[in-house]
Image (cartoon, rainbow, N blue to C red; front, side, top):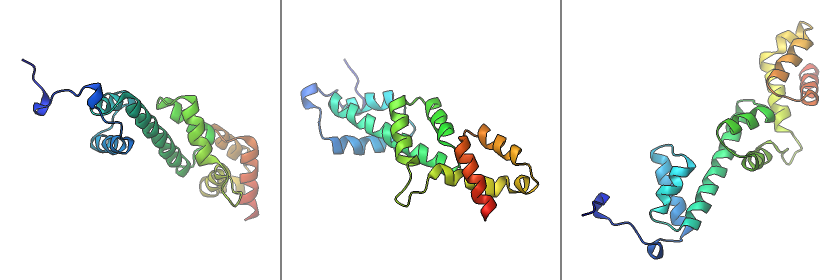
Length: 163
């Protein structure tokens, strides 16, 4: 005698739903309750939904996670390089990382570079006193350790000096 949770039997492949909207809603319910890896999320979705539908929804959730994480890293004034490293450490592949960073770190309609804005904000808030004391080398070194490219650092310092 088999015991099923909640007196439910497992669904056959023919009985599984292919509705992506329902699968997306179910994934959000599962993720709202607890953090799940993509593998576990896929397994849980496979209980009710077809494999293709589950795979598509998991891929979408991973992409949404990557983009949300990248937005958070930009808000924390992280460079594109540091954000990429952080996303790699979270287990995302190169394509997912590139797509998320391209979305978040691309210059907006006005042409402002978000990475440059983050570097300028760091210089203005944390390194202004060192800059005023003539220790430009320390500011450059600190920003390079944070992963900013030299042209971005140079432009950020110029912006702060012109203020």
